[in-house]
Image (cartoon, rainbow, N blue to C red):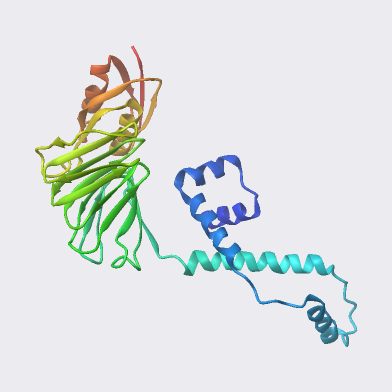
Length: 302
Protein backbone atom coordinates (compact mmCIF):
# COMPACT_ATOMS: atom_id res chain seq x y z
CA UNK A 1 0.00 0.00 0.00
CA UNK A 2 1.50 3.33 -1.02
CA UNK A 3 1.51 6.54 1.05
CA UNK A 4 -1.65 7.93 -0.61
CA UNK A 5 -3.57 4.68 -0.02
CA UNK A 6 -2.50 4.79 3.64
CA UNK A 7 -3.82 8.36 3.87
CA UNK A 8 -7.21 7.29 2.44
CA UNK A 9 -7.38 4.40 4.92
CA UNK A 10 -6.62 6.69 7.86
CA UNK A 11 -9.32 9.08 6.62
CA UNK A 12 -11.85 6.22 6.66
CA UNK A 13 -10.82 5.46 10.26
CA UNK A 14 -11.06 9.14 11.28
CA UNK A 15 -7.34 9.17 12.10
CA UNK A 16 -6.21 12.12 9.99
CA UNK A 17 -4.63 15.44 10.92
CA UNK A 18 -6.26 18.85 10.16
CA UNK A 19 -3.42 19.60 7.74
CA UNK A 20 -3.94 16.34 5.82
CA UNK A 21 -7.71 16.96 5.74
CA UNK A 22 -7.14 20.45 4.32
CA UNK A 23 -4.81 19.02 1.65
CA UNK A 24 -7.52 16.51 0.61
CA UNK A 25 -10.09 19.31 0.41
CA UNK A 26 -7.86 21.53 -1.73
CA UNK A 27 -7.00 18.70 -4.13
CA UNK A 28 -10.68 17.75 -4.60
CA UNK A 29 -10.01 14.18 -3.39
CA UNK A 30 -12.13 14.61 -0.25
CA UNK A 31 -15.25 15.25 -2.33
CA UNK A 32 -14.62 12.06 -4.32
CA UNK A 33 -14.00 9.99 -1.17
CA UNK A 34 -17.22 11.28 0.43
CA UNK A 35 -19.12 10.41 -2.75
CA UNK A 36 -17.81 6.83 -2.49
CA UNK A 37 -19.01 6.55 1.09
CA UNK A 38 -22.44 7.89 0.10
CA UNK A 39 -22.69 5.16 -2.53
CA UNK A 40 -21.72 2.43 -0.05
CA UNK A 41 -24.43 3.62 2.33
CA UNK A 42 -27.01 2.97 -0.39
CA UNK A 43 -25.99 -0.70 -0.68
CA UNK A 44 -27.91 -3.36 1.24
CA UNK A 45 -26.81 -6.87 2.26
CA UNK A 46 -29.15 -9.90 2.29
CA UNK A 47 -30.93 -10.43 5.61
CA UNK A 48 -28.88 -12.61 7.97
CA UNK A 49 -30.05 -14.39 11.17
CA UNK A 50 -27.25 -13.66 13.61
CA UNK A 51 -28.34 -16.18 16.30
CA UNK A 52 -28.64 -19.06 13.80
CA UNK A 53 -25.29 -18.20 12.29
CA UNK A 54 -23.64 -18.08 15.69
CA UNK A 55 -25.20 -21.42 16.67
CA UNK A 56 -23.89 -23.06 13.47
CA UNK A 57 -20.47 -21.65 14.30
CA UNK A 58 -20.59 -23.25 17.79
CA UNK A 59 -21.87 -26.59 16.47
CA UNK A 60 -19.10 -26.72 13.90
CA UNK A 61 -16.43 -26.17 16.50
CA UNK A 62 -17.89 -27.87 19.62
CA UNK A 63 -15.92 -31.12 19.08
CA UNK A 64 -12.63 -29.29 19.32
CA UNK A 65 -11.01 -29.78 22.73
CA UNK A 66 -9.09 -26.51 22.69
CA UNK A 67 -11.00 -23.97 24.80
CA UNK A 68 -12.54 -21.21 22.78
CA UNK A 69 -12.83 -17.72 24.22
CA UNK A 70 -16.43 -16.52 23.93
CA UNK A 71 -16.81 -13.37 21.87
CA UNK A 72 -19.40 -10.71 22.25
CA UNK A 73 -21.82 -11.22 19.35
CA UNK A 74 -22.37 -7.49 19.01
CA UNK A 75 -18.63 -6.80 18.68
CA UNK A 76 -18.28 -9.72 16.25
CA UNK A 77 -21.05 -8.36 14.02
CA UNK A 78 -19.66 -4.82 14.18
CA UNK A 79 -16.26 -6.12 13.12
CA UNK A 80 -17.74 -7.94 10.13
CA UNK A 81 -19.78 -4.87 9.14
CA UNK A 82 -16.71 -2.65 9.31
CA UNK A 83 -14.72 -5.06 7.18
CA UNK A 84 -17.50 -5.26 4.62
CA UNK A 85 -17.73 -1.46 4.47
CA UNK A 86 -14.00 -1.21 3.77
CA UNK A 87 -14.21 -3.94 1.12
CA UNK A 88 -17.15 -2.24 -0.60
CA UNK A 89 -15.37 1.13 -0.54
CA UNK A 90 -12.28 -0.48 -2.03
CA UNK A 91 -14.43 -2.11 -4.73
CA UNK A 92 -15.89 1.26 -5.69
CA UNK A 93 -12.43 2.82 -5.81
CA UNK A 94 -11.00 0.14 -8.07
CA UNK A 95 -13.88 -1.13 -10.19
CA UNK A 96 -16.65 1.48 -10.23
CA UNK A 97 -14.76 4.44 -11.66
CA UNK A 98 -12.98 5.09 -14.93
CA UNK A 99 -11.97 8.65 -14.13
CA UNK A 100 -8.70 9.65 -15.73
CA UNK A 101 -6.55 12.52 -14.49
CA UNK A 102 -4.08 14.39 -16.68
CA UNK A 103 -1.66 16.80 -15.03
CA UNK A 104 0.84 19.27 -16.45
CA UNK A 105 3.51 19.87 -13.83
CA UNK A 106 4.80 23.34 -13.03
CA UNK A 107 7.26 24.48 -15.67
CA UNK A 108 5.84 22.00 -18.19
CA UNK A 109 2.87 21.46 -20.52
CA UNK A 110 1.00 18.30 -21.53
CA UNK A 111 -0.79 17.27 -24.74
CA UNK A 112 -3.41 14.55 -25.02
CA UNK A 113 -5.66 13.11 -27.74
CA UNK A 114 -9.08 11.72 -26.78
CA UNK A 115 -10.49 8.60 -28.43
CA UNK A 116 -12.74 10.74 -30.66
CA UNK A 117 -9.74 12.64 -32.05
CA UNK A 118 -10.31 15.79 -29.97
CA UNK A 119 -7.16 17.16 -28.36
CA UNK A 120 -6.20 19.16 -25.28
CA UNK A 121 -3.02 21.05 -24.47
CA UNK A 122 -2.67 21.74 -20.73
CA UNK A 123 -0.82 24.84 -19.59
CA UNK A 124 1.70 24.60 -16.73
CA UNK A 125 0.23 23.35 -13.45
CA UNK A 126 -3.19 22.60 -14.96
CA UNK A 127 -5.18 19.36 -14.82
CA UNK A 128 -8.33 17.70 -16.16
CA UNK A 129 -10.53 14.81 -14.98
CA UNK A 130 -12.74 12.84 -17.34
CA UNK A 131 -14.43 9.46 -17.82
CA UNK A 132 -12.18 7.80 -20.38
CA UNK A 133 -14.22 4.59 -20.55
CA UNK A 134 -17.46 6.36 -21.54
CA UNK A 135 -15.92 9.32 -23.35
CA UNK A 136 -17.72 8.89 -26.69
CA UNK A 137 -21.11 8.88 -24.89
CA UNK A 138 -20.24 11.67 -22.43
CA UNK A 139 -17.71 14.23 -23.65
CA UNK A 140 -17.56 16.13 -20.36
CA UNK A 141 -14.56 16.96 -18.19
CA UNK A 142 -13.43 18.96 -15.18
CA UNK A 143 -10.70 21.57 -15.70
CA UNK A 144 -8.47 23.14 -13.09
CA UNK A 145 -6.28 25.83 -14.61
CA UNK A 146 -5.90 26.59 -18.30
CA UNK A 147 -6.11 24.50 -21.47
CA UNK A 148 -6.43 24.75 -25.24
CA UNK A 149 -9.03 22.42 -26.80
CA UNK A 150 -9.44 21.29 -30.41
CA UNK A 151 -12.80 19.53 -30.56
CA UNK A 152 -13.96 17.14 -33.27
CA UNK A 153 -17.60 17.36 -34.36
CA UNK A 154 -20.00 15.12 -32.49
CA UNK A 155 -21.89 15.12 -29.21
CA UNK A 156 -21.66 18.17 -26.98
CA UNK A 157 -18.21 18.75 -25.53
CA UNK A 158 -18.45 20.32 -22.06
CA UNK A 159 -15.65 21.86 -20.01
CA UNK A 160 -16.68 22.32 -16.37
CA UNK A 161 -14.79 24.75 -14.12
CA UNK A 162 -15.51 26.11 -10.61
CA UNK A 163 -16.42 29.44 -12.21
CA UNK A 164 -18.63 28.35 -15.12
CA UNK A 165 -19.01 25.94 -18.02
CA UNK A 166 -18.11 26.03 -21.71
CA UNK A 167 -20.03 23.91 -24.22
CA UNK A 168 -19.24 23.32 -27.90
CA UNK A 169 -20.01 20.95 -30.76
CA UNK A 170 -16.76 21.29 -32.68
CA UNK A 171 -14.26 24.11 -32.45
CA UNK A 172 -10.95 25.37 -31.09
CA UNK A 173 -10.97 27.41 -27.90
CA UNK A 174 -9.01 28.22 -24.75
CA UNK A 175 -10.31 28.20 -21.17
CA UNK A 176 -8.52 29.72 -18.18
CA UNK A 177 -10.07 29.11 -14.77
CA UNK A 178 -7.49 30.02 -12.16
CA UNK A 179 -8.69 31.81 -9.03
CA UNK A 180 -12.23 33.16 -9.04
CA UNK A 181 -12.38 34.34 -12.66
CA UNK A 182 -13.06 32.65 -15.99
CA UNK A 183 -11.55 33.63 -19.36
CA UNK A 184 -12.63 32.00 -22.64
CA UNK A 185 -11.30 32.63 -26.16
CA UNK A 186 -12.78 31.14 -29.36
CA UNK A 187 -10.54 30.66 -32.41
CA UNK A 188 -12.84 28.67 -34.71
CA UNK A 189 -16.47 27.55 -34.59
CA UNK A 190 -18.76 28.56 -31.76
CA UNK A 191 -18.78 28.13 -27.97
CA UNK A 192 -21.35 28.78 -25.29
CA UNK A 193 -20.17 30.16 -21.94
CA UNK A 194 -22.39 29.95 -18.85
CA UNK A 195 -21.70 31.29 -15.35
CA UNK A 196 -23.96 32.28 -12.44
CA UNK A 197 -27.06 32.36 -14.63
CA UNK A 198 -25.32 34.50 -17.28
CA UNK A 199 -24.62 33.33 -20.82
CA UNK A 200 -22.70 34.40 -23.91
CA UNK A 201 -22.11 32.71 -27.27
CA UNK A 202 -18.69 33.28 -28.81
CA UNK A 203 -17.73 32.88 -32.44
CA UNK A 204 -14.35 33.04 -34.19
CA UNK A 205 -11.91 35.65 -32.80
CA UNK A 206 -14.05 36.51 -29.80
CA UNK A 207 -13.45 36.28 -26.05
CA UNK A 208 -15.33 36.85 -22.81
CA UNK A 209 -14.22 37.28 -19.20
CA UNK A 210 -16.11 36.48 -16.01
CA UNK A 211 -14.69 38.73 -13.28
CA UNK A 212 -16.03 38.73 -9.73
CA UNK A 213 -18.91 36.50 -10.91
CA UNK A 214 -19.97 39.08 -13.51
CA UNK A 215 -19.79 38.25 -17.21
CA UNK A 216 -18.22 41.05 -19.23
CA UNK A 217 -19.07 42.15 -22.76
CA UNK A 218 -17.69 40.12 -25.66
CA UNK A 219 -14.34 41.34 -26.96
CA UNK A 220 -12.50 40.83 -30.25
CA UNK A 221 -9.10 39.13 -30.33
CA UNK A 222 -6.45 39.11 -33.04
CA UNK A 223 -4.41 36.02 -32.09
CA UNK A 224 -5.41 32.60 -33.45
CA UNK A 225 -4.15 30.57 -30.49
CA UNK A 226 -3.66 31.25 -26.77
CA UNK A 227 -0.76 33.50 -25.85
CA UNK A 228 0.55 30.95 -23.35
CA UNK A 229 1.22 28.53 -26.20
CA UNK A 230 3.63 31.10 -27.64
CA UNK A 231 5.38 31.68 -24.30
CA UNK A 232 3.39 34.61 -22.93
CA UNK A 233 0.92 35.02 -20.03
CA UNK A 234 -1.72 37.76 -20.30
CA UNK A 235 -3.84 39.27 -17.50
CA UNK A 236 -6.88 41.53 -17.36
CA UNK A 237 -7.29 43.46 -14.07
CA UNK A 238 -6.60 40.32 -12.07
CA UNK A 239 -5.65 39.92 -8.43
CA UNK A 240 -1.88 40.24 -8.11
CA UNK A 241 -1.61 36.95 -6.23
CA UNK A 242 -3.15 35.11 -9.20
CA UNK A 243 -0.38 36.66 -11.31
CA UNK A 244 2.25 35.46 -8.84
CA UNK A 245 0.68 31.99 -8.87
CA UNK A 246 0.99 31.90 -12.67
CA UNK A 247 4.62 32.98 -12.34
CA UNK A 248 5.22 30.07 -9.96
CA UNK A 249 3.70 27.60 -12.42
CA UNK A 250 5.58 28.87 -15.46
CA UNK A 251 8.99 29.16 -13.81
CA UNK A 252 8.59 26.46 -11.13
CA UNK A 253 9.60 28.88 -8.36
CA UNK A 254 8.23 29.76 -4.92
CA UNK A 255 6.97 33.33 -4.56
CA UNK A 256 6.55 35.05 -1.19
CA UNK A 257 4.67 38.34 -1.47
CA UNK A 258 3.39 40.78 1.16
CA UNK A 259 1.39 42.77 -1.39
CA UNK A 260 -2.35 43.28 -0.77
CA UNK A 261 -5.32 44.74 -2.63
CA UNK A 262 -3.57 45.09 -6.00
CA UNK A 263 -4.69 44.09 -9.48
CA UNK A 264 -2.57 43.71 -12.60
CA UNK A 265 -3.20 44.14 -16.31
CA UNK A 266 -0.38 43.20 -18.63
CA UNK A 267 1.76 40.24 -19.58
CA UNK A 268 5.06 38.47 -19.03
CA UNK A 269 7.16 36.07 -21.11
CA UNK A 270 8.15 32.56 -20.04
CA UNK A 271 11.84 32.61 -20.96
CA UNK A 272 13.35 35.22 -18.59
CA UNK A 273 12.43 35.32 -14.89
CA UNK A 274 14.00 38.72 -14.23
CA UNK A 275 12.26 40.30 -17.21
CA UNK A 276 8.95 38.72 -16.21
CA UNK A 277 9.19 40.10 -12.69
CA UNK A 278 10.14 43.52 -14.01
CA UNK A 279 7.04 43.54 -16.24
CA UNK A 280 4.86 42.77 -13.24
CA UNK A 281 6.48 44.79 -10.45
CA UNK A 282 7.62 47.97 -12.17
CA UNK A 283 4.13 49.25 -13.14
CA UNK A 284 2.92 48.59 -9.59
CA UNK A 285 5.87 50.26 -7.87
CA UNK A 286 6.92 47.15 -5.94
CA UNK A 287 10.30 45.43 -5.69
CA UNK A 288 11.49 41.84 -6.03
CA UNK A 289 14.49 39.76 -4.99
CA UNK A 290 15.49 36.48 -6.69
CA UNK A 291 17.49 33.88 -4.75
CA UNK A 292 20.91 32.81 -6.05
CA UNK A 293 19.54 29.40 -7.12
CA UNK A 294 16.61 31.02 -8.99
CA UNK A 295 14.14 28.94 -6.96
CA UNK A 296 12.56 31.53 -4.68
CA UNK A 297 11.33 35.09 -5.16
CA UNK A 298 10.57 37.70 -2.49
CA UNK A 299 8.19 40.51 -3.48
CA UNK A 300 7.47 43.50 -1.21
CA UNK A 301 6.59 47.15 -1.16
CA UNK A 302 9.40 49.59 -1.81
